Image: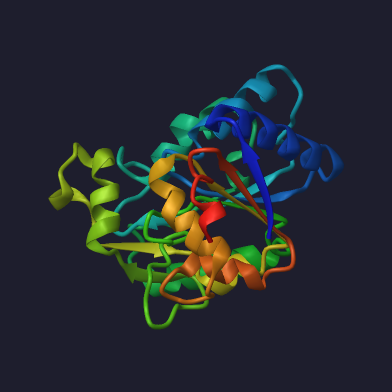
Length: 245
């Protein structure tokens, strides 16, 4: 893993947005995998600023988001699709037909997951996958477990993950769906390049375990060690435990 440490989340976001802009300039048809949550919000803010400054053009870019809550879709204000509209898609020129998303309201969830896998394959795979890091080490909604599902799938969320997402649901854990649809760990690892983001002191312990090892399904992010092109972008607060490993 290549590790990059920044002074603040905003400095990280500034640098990564410009790196993505460079990739889009070099490959207008870039296939970009995107996360949700608090961590990427500064990145999306920077990408919007670059677009408004005419320094990035998403007109040929295709995006795939990592996950969606089971039972929620584009019309639900608490859905990840709505989150992405608010923070990115409503403000840049990614054509709607090129925004790919799991539909948590699909009548057949298993068929929806299979459809998503085929859609990724039809576009030649994901060129750059940006990931967040759950406090328990999950990436996407691939939760710690004895074994992990390879492909896009419906998964049960842990109590810790539901608590972490309660802020999107009026701070009511009972309102957070118990399941989600998520890219699988193999789907993520088939991306050509991966950048994992982690900021803040509460991620420091997980960052240290991920980087120092061992590789284990009990810490899904640790499986990124097997990928040949992974970068870990963190701020100083998230890096504070690295010297202890």
